[in-house]
Image (cartoon, rainbow over all chains, first blue to last red; front, side, top):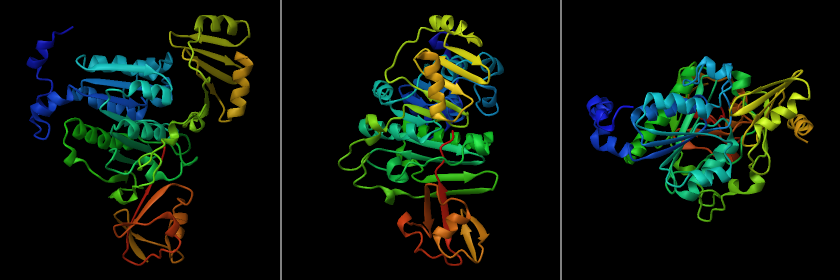
Length: 347
Length: 67
């Protein structure tokens, strides 16, 4: 462990401090900020690595999934052994990030984000960065951000296309204003794939806006919805201020935060591009993995365990049980079929 | 007819004369898309009525979920 004082001598942030809009003053501000990143996939690993290197004081990164080989092409913090051992992304990311910059307080959380978790995590957070792969979670982030007056940065990508928008409560339109309806289906990383430069482009936009917000340089914000297609050589940004709706249920004059209500929360969901269904028990629980392994061992099939999860393969089916109660059912996009398997194993 | 679409000069097929047809042509009819024509955002309810003229500067931004 290097002593604190040594960092000054190391001059770790010298090049960033030479950048006038940040400077020494901005660097000191960064060190006092707390950023919450939802998702530790392609966008999440890119954003979090940038911000950890930049010296943000505290970063919490949350993810519900674990590392697989198909992630390694673009999810920049992970290595082959993470995939072989099925390490949860939040754990693998935290370990790697602490090696990059031990000065930053990095907290990796293996969890599915719902209203409950967000309400618990948002106090004291200066900024939320969206690195999720679904609109359910984004609309949840959108409502919580409005409710607690926290800026957040939307980012998404698929194929060679990507887009980003910075949402400032009370100033810009919110995601609910922009979307009007929740997009259903459409292209996913599974159906049309993705190339890593598209990820990195979105990450560049998100991290830059994040730095502007964290050093309180709001006038430098882009203020526009930006999108690009790297393969088609297209790049555009449009002003969407006029889309803000005064009667929006999320950011209007009488908000009800519709996506924070129970009815609007997904209990089972198909994971983007994974041919996998996640099932979450109605209440959070602490699953006894050792006991589960004992039970499963008597049922035939193959059982593997690490400190965070149990993987169970029987025939063509594979299920992964997390300590927090969630189960991933692989090999299907059919929620009903997944639930059947779930109940078959867990009663 | 030639328009500027997302910053690129683009020749549109003759059959395309309004925004709804344009979105269908690019298979964006079922997506959530923000459409801007000559600097003005056109509400979804007006896409069918909004005709496209040669030289229009059109920006199409569609929302995706991946990440």
